[in-house]
Length: 347
Image 1 (cartoon, rainbow, N blue to C red):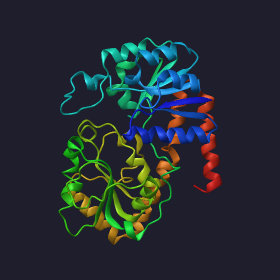
Image 2: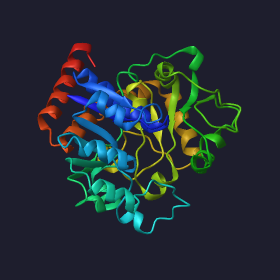
Image 3: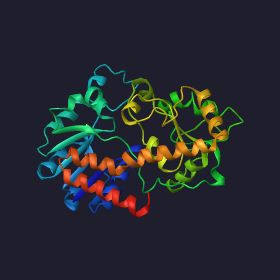
């Protein structure tokens, strides 16, 4: 099928949607990336004539509605802004989430195409907290959580140049800093720890080493004693939004240590699968534990890796999208291709 995927900027969603694109291409679909900074929606649709359009609810403007109205058979999957009980009294200054606007829901409601709206929260969160009010506006509402792109983040090899106690890749800006400052930034004051930080933003620590190529990340994660996950404030305070790092570190042969997000209870089948910290002292204790017990560290890595490979790759997420679009045969084909890939490469 011909699939068009909206990628409107270079932030984190670009990598998630890129993961979908790789899976769709592997499964034989004709995939085009739509970047509105470089091409108008009219030109893009004339050039690609997509049968499936994967965009965003906040990206549906008059021009998008016009090209879709002219193609009523095109099915539409939209990553949605939050629109549920959690947003009714949300402190937007404290938690600057994307929240649906009246114009946004009107534009989606006026689409004549079959339309599914989804977000990267777990099914219970979608149903009861963040997306409830989208029901009745779109044809289907559901969960498509983040996952691992195994085409880029699989089987890292430990390398001396990346050897460290803690590895972290991510950005630094005021909202994220509220949790980063209490954890990895604070730990950077401990001169006994070897910490390597890559990413973007103005990190206020000497351990920040700048940009790292995507092809090198898997080796960094595999080389660290632990790879730290630091979630954004709404995740730790309100309990939802598990970021991509949680899934891609394990498939790189890295050991994930994370803060606690309530949604973990819905996707993790073991309380001990992911070591979870409450403060920086807990992180130090985990580092000491895994340094003293390398076999235990390997066991955690293997368990975490199989957890992701068995249920949390972008093959699984693409299957979720197909099901939301009422294309169950395509969903089955995605998972079939993944099973064959694992057998072929011994994954």
